[in-house]
Length: 371
Image (cartoon, rainbow, N blue to C red; front, side, top):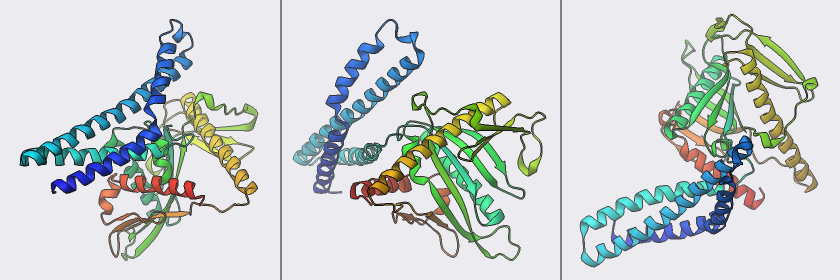
């Protein structure tokens, strides 16, 4: 690129970073950091482990946010000086170095801009993801498994931890459903835009006549609850069933009744867990997921009530949000944002950041315009 093009990108990045700094507000965060440092230095801090954990986690997150913005600002200032020197001395090596740094900075500023859009009440949380096969028979079950692998590969690409909590295998192939946790800051904020109905169009590998098949799978994403959420579930409202865990094809993989199914009687919500080693562990995991779903239900009811009072009860999210087409052409397209790519293999291998970023921007635009 020319010197002028490099300078134009630097100017655009400077503007973007300024907008980010206005949202992050490093000065106010520095004040909060100072207050937290005083609190965590108290000799009796760990007398209350839960409070200590919250304070130290918050302090660590704030320091990381401020440091990230300040480092980007310093790098942007440095590369601007480098470009000026390269222009004055007509230094091709300096120009090439500046171009590499500008490219890296653009990637990092874009990623930070997306992070600033994640300002919802639970966006910072870890995520619980449930995938269920829908219409389409064995193809739908296979599609559910493809989506499961896609999200695991996405998490792996980012170094995020995952833990499978429950798996229900289909008889012939694939999954009826799977529940797993993604452990990373802002996992919920990022993956929440993946919630909805996904559609796959392909030549069915399970059809002897090689016909085209359309199948569906549902993705549900909810935030992991914390102790401060205060979701109390009385024992009298829960029906508990225990059964033996099973693997693919219904083969028994456990000789004791360690799997647990919880039914929340007032709402009818059912949660099953079978991937832990003991009944106690499965029950605790199931209760945690149940509390998360009740939290989401409560917030949804509150939001619906607000919309009703405002005279607007239109839903902003459609049922079918993304299509994966493998035949007669190759394409993956998000029907809400219009974002699309022509390489389904890469998408199913976890390359979904473009879809997530577009979804976050689309959601924020809808919030800003009231749509």
